[in-house]
Image (cartoon, rainbow, N blue to C red):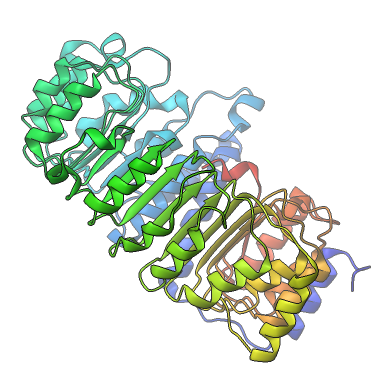
Length: 505
């Protein structure tokens, strides 16, 4: 089978596939529309007129599909075909976003060529609830738009609840925003050096504001601390490194807290005063910090830890104390871990759904194999509740199987360049775990993968919708992936092979 080309392997896979998952006509139609959106930037000019007829009023579909189509439109703006073929910028797909049906828009996902025009057309999207702004150049808002344009643009955002505008917001933008968006709940202008203490007076008018991020702005920390003490009730205050300066009443309502370079006193303050915290991120921890007391935070569900030694920081004790409530765990630049620690996490964290291991250092000693044999004898089932796994650390094949072998609910699997996977290792995984719920797969280290691994995986992973980077596998290229996608569409299968380039966002 390994000697056959991918087309013949696909034909053999189709013949041996016992049954096809029936898809509804609604799903088939949606897939067809998405296909049209994806190919639109690349088709010749003479064929675009026919596609425009099919894609006009694109968002006039059931509301549950609006978000997915919006993402596809934004991704299409990054197509390089217009530049390569010396074609003019085509605004047709972006113009479809100018609809009253649109509820959210993220300019970070939009190519800079389309941003300014789309911002000027925001009055045509009056029902936006969530907006992430990004300008096309380095100039702040007041140097990009006139006062009249600012009132016209921001005056249409009266229903806005969440706004993110990082780096280029300024005092003028804030003053006009609060005039119209009185019901704003969340505001993020981090990194905007042109936002000063003047904006604090304007922000006092937003009575429903519960989340604010002014980190990296020109607002004085003392001024911000006074503002937080006056308002209270904030659930998120961005990256705030002076937690000791906050009153206990202010800390008691915080639900999300991010800190860099925290000291042991800061951690003790969090444990004593921030009992409502559900999401905690501690970056650049020093080697002397002890984290066992984090287990006292009864509402903690999401934990992001970066920097310390796993065992010397006593993080393992804190995790075990939160074994029932913790659903998300993100470990970055972590040292001092081995297979035994992974087994303990998988065995006792009964609610864990999302696990990320980023640039962690895992040791493998003589006792690791003993622990694996002991787990096999006890028939331990590890990580049974896990739904999303992201590994960008140098782990051994047995550690990879320990993480994934029993994760039957896994829907998303992503591995980085430092995580070595091969066709043989994937075959072992499929024997342990059929991955019947897997929907998204991305493997960055692909030099030891071939087309045989793809069809071996698809035999059992029948819900797998997106496979990223298959064009870099052995015997595969961009054209071959396109041919296989055509076969999948012909049989109405959910599988799609997408390139690394298409996954910019």
